[in-house]
Image (cartoon, rainbow, N blue to C red):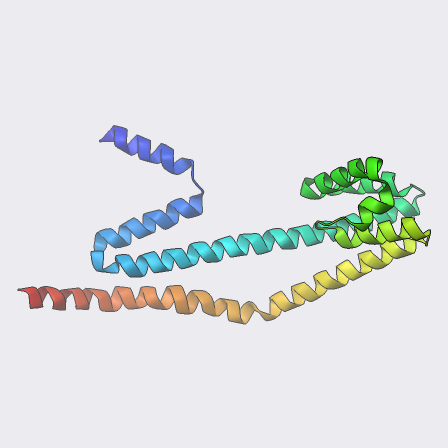
Length: 203
């Protein structure tokens, strides 16, 4: 018996804590009553989908913030007198993460295809910055002014996104209340009486 417990603990430690906790809660509910298995499964599935969507949204927000920081640092590097490629390398190194990998890949491609062509057709989280750089390099327009404008636009988008998030807080608070707390309260109060009634009918 002890060996099986140790194996279960080792397996549980290899999974995320949220998944382990959710599975443990599901097993506990099912062990209390098989009739609660279907509602518990629906609730667990809903929570898992919501957590996955929330994780993706958080990752997108982080990439947007990294793009804005990359634009700011590029403006500072250009103001200090660096060229566009050294400025991007310095800025991306300071930002780090996936943004640094994205910029490094673009700069390696630019050594073959040219900076203007590579940046104009670039995608990714910093595509707005890259395309402005590509057009400025191709046309010979003022690069610092263009990059500064992109940095200002990215910060304005971040501010608007945060404002929308704040306005959604009252609506988001209704989700745990209506889908988790209220059904759990009903299960704890109504389910025992319902089970007693069903057992009496069977007798």
